[in-house]
Image 1: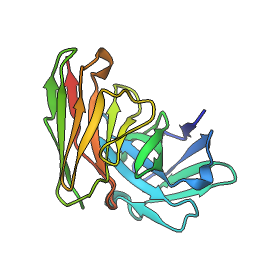
Image 2: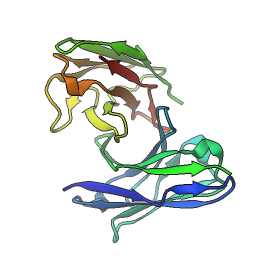
Image 3: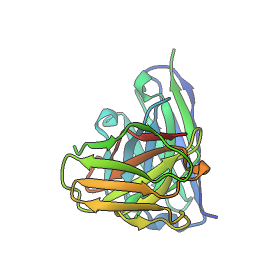
Image 4: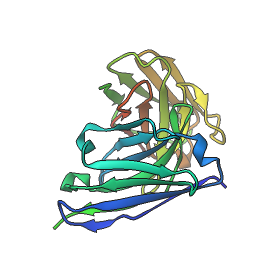
Length: 117
Length: 106
């Protein structure tokens, strides 16, 4: 079964850091671009970042540039999002998603990040 | 950045209705448009990619059309399980951007 499972979310104070993980299974992880998409409570979807299979290309949404980094371990079938200098506006459900045919065809169940003092 | 605007933002419909949701891009995105369905508390699910290609496993009552800047998602014969929020998303360029969503209510 093709599956993505996120972990690492939680409550963090403003200015703090958090590392999200996404474990992939059921497909050849190393063959796909991967992304993170977030959704603030009661709001719409916001694309955050996309990473190429060999990590040679990474694209970020402007509000997170310089604060978030993305990486992957193809041997471990895992995607990561390191989030530093977190702000209240980063509070959201974070979804890991597979990019295929220029769309996000597989999504994880999401992991909630809450930035609050 | 390419902005995506959906209309309407919300709508009421009945089982059996034909529903049309539109999505407009601020720049030409050729056919690089996807549609997603999201139910409360769940992750989004891909319905349509490349503007008109039906994702595997998605019922044929869902269809997409359009190219350039104007796109349409049509749900024919609305079913109870179709009451949800729908999003369009452009894949022409980075940053990827989504429409604000269309909530289809009973």
